[in-house]
Image (cartoon, rainbow, N blue to C red; front, side, top):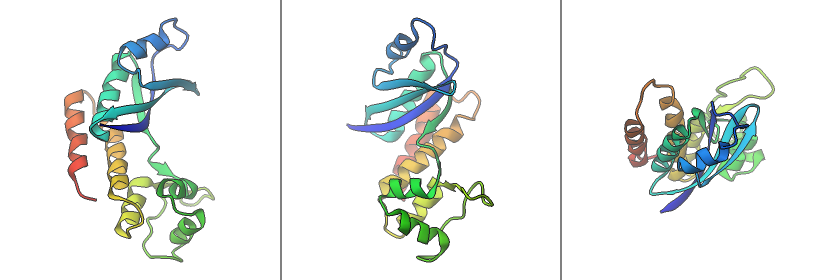
Amino acid sequence: MKTFDFSIIAHGVDPHDDDFEDRFFEAGCDDATLSLQRGLIIADFAREAESLSAAIASALHHVRAAGAEITRVEPDPLVSLSDIAERSMLSRQAISLYAKGERGADFPPPAVKIMSGHPLWDWGRVAEWLYARSLISEDVVVEARIIREANALLMVPHLDADALAARLAKLEKQPG
């Protein structure tokens, strides 16, 4: 088994209730650190599992069992150039040169804030681009796909935990 680090952002449980932390612990979130930020519950997991997809699927199930409604899974799929450098373990300067087209071609365009001074990129697309150039490992691409799919599946009404887990598990088997 391996330990996977990720966060689940949720709401719907009153943090002022006396049993707030106990609810999450008893629901199976004993491997998460809970915090509150801007009215949201942040459950930072260090979950042992056979795969990232299994870790996320079980954590989603446990957070729901505590009575919370899930907003999203992080790390955030939208990233700045600094985030890209940190996640890829490349220098900020190298990433900036890639983004400007001065080192390599066809770097993915920003996904949002295209016209602003603070654009954001889709981490999954950037990870695939970096992987195609042997700059990051396949595992990083698979992780990005799983996080993206987990967030997309959270938008599907009435998707049960088993279906979610099965769809995420398929991504573990896809090549980079």
